[in-house]
Structure formats: C-alpha cells, structure tokens
Image (cartoon, rainbow, N blue to C red; front, top):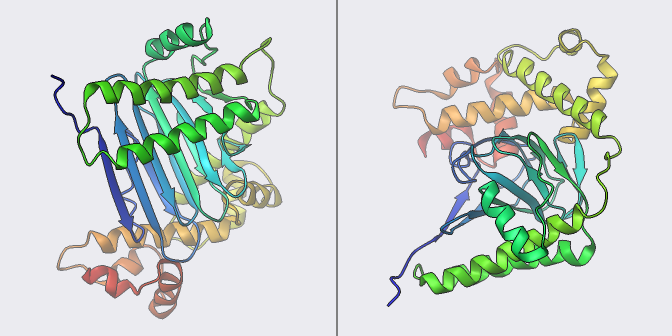
Length: 323
C-alpha cells in the first residue's frame, strides 16, 4: 500500500517583510523591495515532487525582486496572472510566456501595478530533457548560460497557466496527505504543460531575438545603478554622481529607471531607504529606537520619515517596532 506524503505547503505574508520573502522559490534567495504604497499581502504556495518543485506567489502590490535560481536546476518561470507585461532582465514578458533559465542564472523582475501571480518550476536538466523526448520526440533548446524566452502559441501558453492553477487548487484540497500514485499523476500533468509550452516556443530554426543585446545592456545598467545606490543609501540622492558613476546621461538613467521600476531614480532611492528601515524595525532588539534607525538610513527629519513610512507600509514606524 502506498505511504502518504505531504508535498504541499502554503504560507501568507500579511504586511511587507523582505526577510520573510527571501526564500519564496525553493533553495534560492530573492531580495525583494516594495515599490508602491498600500497594504501588502502575499500568498505563497509550494509543491515538492520527487524530481522537481513548483513555487507560486500571489502579490497584491508590485515589488522588485533580484536574485539567482538554484544551482543544478533549470528554472521555468512565468507570470500566470498580471494586468500588463512584467519587466524581467531588461525585457517585457507577457502573461503565460515561459522564461527558461540555465542553472544558477540571475533574475531581476518587476510586475506592473495591480495583482500579480508568478510560478517557478525547478527541475534538473536531464529530467526535463528526458520528459521532452518522451512527450515531443526531441530535446528542448535549453540555454547553457543565462536565459531566454520565446512566445508560445496562445493555446500552449494558456495550457501551462491552467495546469499551474489546477495543480495548486488540487494540492490545497489534499489536506496535507497524498499517495505517491496521486503525486505522479499531478507531476505528469504539470510537466506535460511546461514541456508543451517550451517546445512550442522553440520550434523551428534558431533565431536571434530582436533587441536581446540592448536588453542585456539595460539589465547590466540596472544592476550597476542598484549597486551604487545601495552603497550610498545614507546620503541624499545625487543624480549627477549616479550619472558619473555609470558613465551615462542623467536623462538616460531617468528613462532606464522608469522602464525597470516604474519610477525615477530619486523615488527608487527613497523607497530603498524605507525598505531597509522597515527591515531594521522588524528585527530590532529592545534597545532599538525609531530615531536611531531613521538616522541610520539618512532620514534626518523624523516627522517626514514617519509620514513617508506610513504612506508606503500602512502603519507608523513605532507600530512596526513594537510588533
């Protein structure tokens, strides 16, 4: 008789907490920052099968996430629900369009405003290729480094979205117990949908995607800009200094940030400081004070800091500290 297993977990983050969101994808760390004001809520779900895993998150507010996928695993990622295309590594990616990442590849991603639900399937390369040969009669064109994405026909894109929704819906009804036979059936449905979507997108002769080189350049500039601003969070924003550090014009940086983050670099700098302050408040010991933390991240006017903080996170700094 099959032994029962418990492969499904569900976790809710009510109120933005960057540390609680670090491990939203299995065996990874994605740094996340809130990009819009309001009450943040994330519902995170995970399915772990013998040979692969599926993670999904539904967010009420847009964030910017940056990190790397697990070593030794291909990552198949997509937005299964979003109002407009999301920004990923310098490109706009439509809902249902599968992004294929080689092992240990990096991802910077920002959804458009409005509700957003994402999904990531992590699977060893040899397992994915084995399934592809069985299902479509050939291996998939998988990147050896970096990532690629090619739009699949609408039926294939809708098929993978439907498969993820149905798998999570079924898992939520398992009540923590499922037999290996049931797991195998669910795994087969998921793998079939992902293989079909990726194979449909990479069918035909290999081709260079338009704008791919410029997308990589934009993504590299985003990463350099982030690194510079993170190193100077305690200082007032200086547009000229940022432009000199990157070697590009201030107007170009403004366009770059609005493309990547939905707002300019000055607002990014302010939100980054507020996000860091929130993390410090959430994890402060009994000696920590709002004043000390605000000053640490460059907020010299405490009244303005409190107003900005409450506008973005929906509560006063002192309430975060007490909580």
